[in-house]
Amino acid sequence: MVLLNADFHVEDYRSQHVTDYETITAAIDAASPGDNIHFDGSRLYSPTKRIDLYGETALGHGATIRRPDEWNVVTTQPANIGDTVVHVDTVPNDIVYRNQLTLVEYGADAERPFRDGMEKGGKHVQSWDSVGQTIEFQTPIAEAFPAGSSVFRVDSLMTTFGGGSADDFVFDGNRADNDSHISWIYGHSFLSWTGDGSVTNSIFKNQPGQAVYIFSGSNFQVENNLFHDLNLSAMHYSSTYQGTGTVDFNSNVIVRSNEQADRGGHSQGVVTVSYRNERIRVHDNVVVDVDRPFVGNFGFDVRDWVVSGNQLYNVNGLVLGKLVDNGDDGDPTGFLFEDNYCQDCGATEILGRDYAAVVRQWQDMHFRNNEILDGTFLVEGVASGSIDGLNITSCDVNPVTVRDSTISISGVSTTAACDLTHDDQAELIYDPVTGQVTLDLAQTPTGGISEALLLLANGSVISFVDSVDIPSGLNIEADVLAARWTDAADNYGNFRRTYRTVPEPSCFFLITSAFALLMIFKRGFL
Image: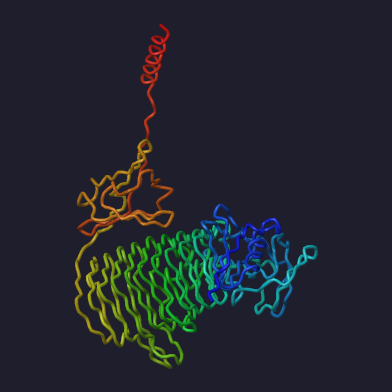
């Protein structure tokens, strides 16, 4: 007997509840694992607490889930180790039971004024007293904070426990009003806490923290999403060794991530890891304008990774691997980087490190058929593996370095070239009268292009060599997140985007037009 999954619609519960959080939670509570929760695609939801799924599938139909504005709350008394109650200058009117909060001490560092908050992601609210101006946590705090410390709400927007999926949402991090304190530990838009599932066909924008965090995932897919304008990583993995099956990050578009990586910590890459991550597949993604490596924080007990078919533009390396001591778990092993293209690539580095107590080395690490344009490549401390096919164009005298490694090397091709970047020398011109976009390539080094990419705000990627392939009516500012071009000589850059000005009618034109109309009307009355 086959049981069909049931469908529940969030807005069916709106009349019985007041807030977005209560309405969404009521629909989920009525459902069972495997059921579908339908959101109204025309609505913007701003839940005051995270949305919890326990095996259900949330279907957004284009709905937006927006992080509420951060609180302006400070403590009025010191909070000591072991306390469960903190005294505050005001209790927010949108506080709810089990909100996740952190205390943060304000410091004098201009670059990072709010120091690290509570360990382990903060504390959950048990109760509050608006008159007495106190907030009670469910468990005691483990650190001391002076009076004047800030209190921030750091719930994820959506969390799955033991499985669950989300499809076709806009996750708006509202970072303009959530930027005082950021940390990789909390404040994610989507958090998977064990189990299988997926995040698909969604947009993650303006994120104060990491967009997607997978803890101990099994057969989890993050696929066909758009990530843009993120403070930290687009994707973070932790402890996937506890799960089964592969965990995939594929066919996503990422534009401008990791913009506050140093402030938030542990975010030195578009894809980052912490503690024992296995069976990871990262493939067929497009990345533009990231001042960090594509894969970063690489070296915390990592095994069985495949990174393939990714197109990277203006990043700082395909991968940054720093070998760290992983206790008794042995050497990190089983890596394949294959068929990746990295333009304006910066430094790709696999680094080895020796410790006094134990010596670890990378094992079974392979680089196959990768192309790096304007970058360098360094491999260190690899005990077994290969470089089989590497095409690198660089101004560096020695763009490829292999040291302290025992690996086979073949098919390495290097081309010396400098000054390949030519931003704004190719131009997109939008004509508001016709709605057409044309190209001006006269200022490019070769007078033409071999390929161009438009990354759109709806997640689409348009590849073209001629303006006829650009959709008419495309707003080259509002609709386009990034626009890149490359020519046959490997020159490249960002397009300059220009609106063609519609000329104002002259006085002579107005007078002539008026006279012509007068003559028409005169003839009509004869």
